[in-house]
Image (tube, rainbow, N blue to C red; front, side, top):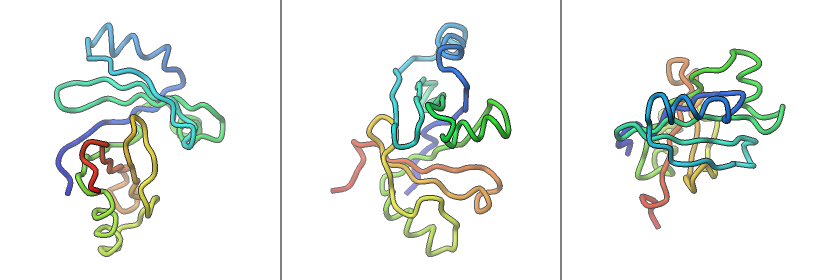
Length: 138
């Protein structure tokens, strides 16, 4: 079940160039960086209230983030909703004929499990569901 907005993903060309704005100008709590090799991306996370801002820097020209930046430029990439049962939510979406990019959970940043819904099924907004480690079943 979806419980809250977890984070907003923002595609950037350089974490080094953007971290100071969020950390030093907006004074958001800097949670650190992580690399997700499978997705060819480095991320920097910030907390604002109960929501996080996730900056995404591509580590390869083949990265989906690199392709996004090339096509649309830097900016908001996706919104992520937190769930306490990612596998159950994926099954429910599929049963409701929601088009999924990921039909099975995959590894995300900070030891989370993630899955993306296709933007054509979610009002042209790339939508991610994520389950943080402490909320996983089993």
